[in-house]
Length: 175
Length: 448
Image 1: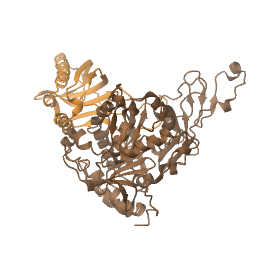
Image 2 (image 1 turned 90 degrees about the vertical axis):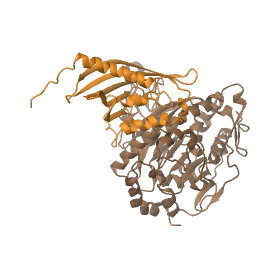
Image 3 (image 1 turned 120 degrees about the horizontal axis):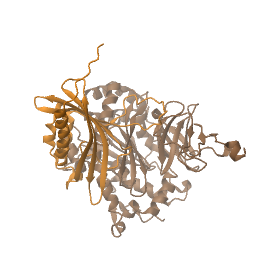
């Protein structure tokens, strides 16, 4: 079979996508959830799997029904999470916490589909909640962004959380 | 420390110092976690010889290992030479555990299998037979749940569980295929004393409509206890708070479907319940088969195991000091459930009570703040109260235990603190009272 080398990603697309990641982070920091949803494709998948912590030589099989997830969301489920946060009853978020996202290590490569690209990035989320309590989540992200009539939209995000034990009592934030 | 004045179950009062005092915490490690049967692993998590699972008994790091003969042993996860941790993985399969420090190697049966330079450095004088891993005194299984106990004088696991088995069997023994825990362990660190989440899940229906109002308003199918958002109404006939079973508790609905009716797509769940209801009735009798199997039930095994048929999560809390714990959660299923139903349960458990659980994420800060507000010089002297519906309990036909009507009560919490006090006062197991209030004289199956 003939291998097709996908076309390299154009520099202007790289700039646009990097800017989009920063923009997304700023929208979420400001709790502009509805604006954030507009950056997502209708068929978006948003996923964070539970990770195994095994010896390198371990040969035990992966869990039959699945490892389980932290997030396994589509558009409707992301909307559901936003409905909860918007309800006015999520006491842990009132007063609003100080939340700041840092996005780095952005790397963009061609995807199989012509109008899509793969975007790797690292996200660090700082949260200051209740007096001096500050917590930080660190995760790697692998995204698929799709170019359509409205510009780039997020088609898929796989998040790898780098904590064996979640270092906080909730994840009321999006990555 | 004398704890006779720290809990008063006749009035429903606790001194806040029980959530913050370091000395009391050390006493808990000795008299509760060093004495009680503690959940270690589900048999489904270590099916094959050499499969192991790392967990904690109190603050003691433990490895639980499936043996060649199918039995299960548990050992302290600590090298007998210099004390190093010998296993750093969560679970897996291994032929041996080799210490990272000097290379001592232990077989799955705990024996010391290899010592580098044994002849050259120890001159062949090392008695390896005395240097095996330290074994957990008792390990026993109840229908898939494996427990360990450090205390040689402890009652048998069956006696320890007592009449709680009536409720345990609704989950563990309704279906012939047994049960499993699914997936990797969902681990969360909470700045809470370990007793507070146990107290919350064992009996606190009161918080549902308020603490989880955000989730309940967003996920409208999940009306957890017939409570309206904002805690404005409740139906006392909707369920039972059952306690007085050696410190174990159940909080249960009685409709036989509420555990699964809230799923976004409940039809396959309802079909499963309908198809298997006769089997459940045959195995458990009419009361449990019709009213409990399929219902939302919170089951608590003292001190730190809780699982909820219906929401289908299974959880232990490992204490990490008076003000800190690790909460470990899994999804649980009956093995007779079809694969798609198991997958839907795992997904829903992660959505609702997982690390980013729509409901679970509401509780942590409340529990942490209750812990923190027990630390100040003045607050530590104060009381907190679990006196709701005091004196309004009694027997109920067909059920064991001392029972209060409704899911909104603090009946179970009072029994939890009573058990805590009984253990903390007792010098040994001989001084710990055994009680199964209103025990059923006739075995359930057959009396329907």
